[in-house]
Amino acid sequence: MSSAPSPSTNPHLGGVSRYDRAAGLMISLLILLGATVAVLLFVWIGSKFVVRTKTVPVVMLPDDSGGSPVGTSSEGMTLEAPTVAEIQRETNVTLPEFRQSLAAVEDLIANRKAELDTAFTKINADETGGGRSTGTGNAMQFGSGSGRGGLSRSQRWEIRYASGETLDAYTKELDFFGIELAAVSGDGSVVYARDFSRPKPTLSRDRAEPETRLYMQWRDGSARRESDRRLLERVGIATAGQTLVQFIPPAVEERLAQLEFEFARREARQIRKTRFAVRKAGGGFEFYVEEQTPL
Image (cartoon, rainbow, N blue to C red):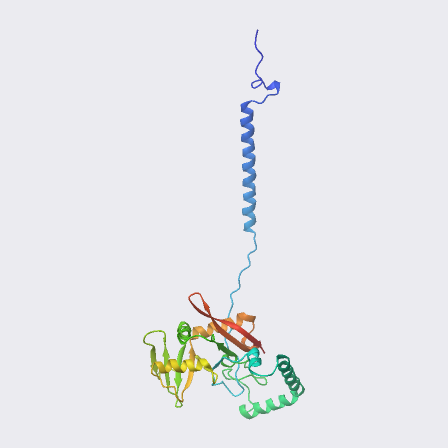
C-alpha cells in the first residue's frame, strides 16, 4: 500500500511549499525595492526643477547729493542731536503741543510758498549770478541745474555714543572703528591722535597730504566733547582755544552709508536726517541706524 503525498509537497492539495514562500518573499522585496527607487527618482527629478530666487546684490549709489545753497558746510558731521523725547524731558512743552507747533509751522510755509519761492530765486540770483549748477554738486539744486538735490552726509548724519560709559570704554570704541581725534588751531594747523587704548598712543602733526576724510564735532556742552578733550590732553596735546574734531575712516563712512540705505531703502537725496548709534557686537562694536527722517 502506498502512502498519500504530504500537503507540503503536493500542490493539488492547496498547501504552500517552502519554495513558494521564498519566491513570494523575494517578489515582495523586489516590488518594495522598485517602489523605493521610483520615489527617490521622482524626488531627485523634482529637485532639479525647483525655482531658486537669486539674491540681488545691493549696489551703493555715490553720495553726490547737494549741500547748503552757498556751498559745502564746514561744520562736519554732528553728534548727539536731541531726540523728541529728550526735548520733552528738558522743556515744559508736552509732545502734543510740540507737534501742534510743527504743524502750525508747516501750514505757514504752505501758505507762504509763493513768497518763499520768490525769495529763493532772488538768493540764487544774488549768490550764484543766476547761472546753472555745473560744478561738483556740493550745493543744493536750484532752478534747472544738473546737480542733484538733497543734503550732504555732513549735514544729515549724526552719531550717538552710549551715555554713561567710562573713558576707557569710550576709547575702545574709538580705537575699534579707527576714529582719529584732532585739535585744529585758528591758523589751520592740526594735531592728530589715535590708538588711545595702547600704552603709547600715535601722534601726528601737520600732515602734508590734504585731508579728505569726513569729520564730526560735538555739540557745545556735550559730555563726550569733554572726553575728547581729556584724551587729547592726556597725550600732551593742548586743547585750549582749539576746535576738537573726529575724523572717520573711509571704510567706516561707507559702512554708515550702507546702513543708512538698508534702513528704509531710501536714496541719499530722499533723507533729511539719519541718526546712528553704537552698540556691542561679539567681541567688538557696530554702528546701527537709530532713527531716520525722510525729506
